[in-house]
Length: 151
Image 1: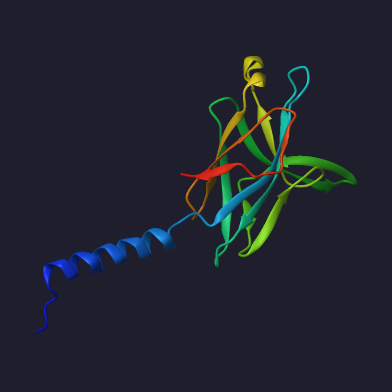
Image 2: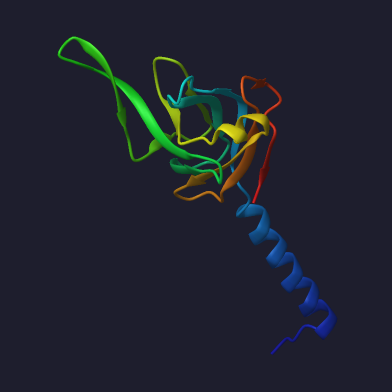
């Protein structure tokens, strides 16, 4: 029976762990974040572009913030009237962009404290498979740089 020296076994183990960490990295990136704050206590809205760089489908299942309650919403035509409704998830096809935009899929921002309008809104995007992605967006600003980090 062939046995690797202890040093070689260590290197093989380290390479295996590296391969696992690379394959488990977040395949979702978030770009073009834009927050439109609500007026007079009304909910705000967030638009963005989510890119699934992975080879398999995934879903955005929620967005958390310590400053507000965030819900996933879409528009649908019902009885010849366009209406907004809350949804549980957005499906993200592999190797494509999913756009949150006016008149379509978007994020609703509820219960944003008045004092929080002065600082960036911290967000954590949660997915069915990919690790969570953290992002920040300032009120009234559009971040075309896609400031985000994986967590």
